Amino acid sequence: MLQSRTRDEQDFRTVYAFSEVPRPQADLDLANWFTSTKPGARFTGPPILALPLPDGGRVTLEGRRLRRMIGGVRPDRHERTLSDATEFAEVLSTEFGLDLDREFTDLVWSATAEG
Image (tube, rainbow, N blue to C red; front, side, top):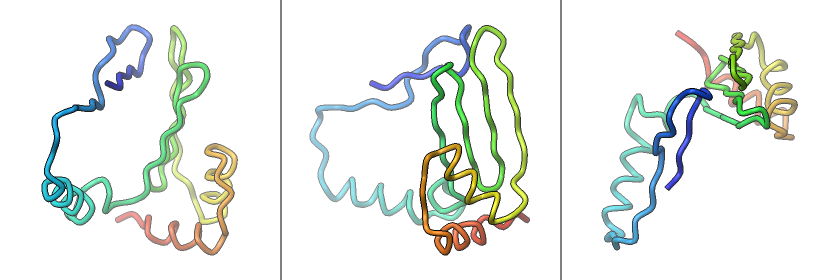
């Protein structure tokens, strides 16, 4: 069981659990197909990255919106919208440690168009 909390005073909540109950492969195939193709699902929209920070905070990139939550007794949240493909590639590198080909990051940036 994986548990998480976003604030120090918040109780832990289960966000993922494993089960030893066998599942037919056909059920897994159908569930995976559905979540990877359903319009509006998390996996068919803009990219989402999240990284826990050593202070208990988290940095999250959802499409073009970057959020940084600094942990501690009084959490502090900073949020901004990325302005272009160069900034997007820089954030992927500096915040998430992803050294990706610029042609690839430009393609992903173009898929994050808002509106």
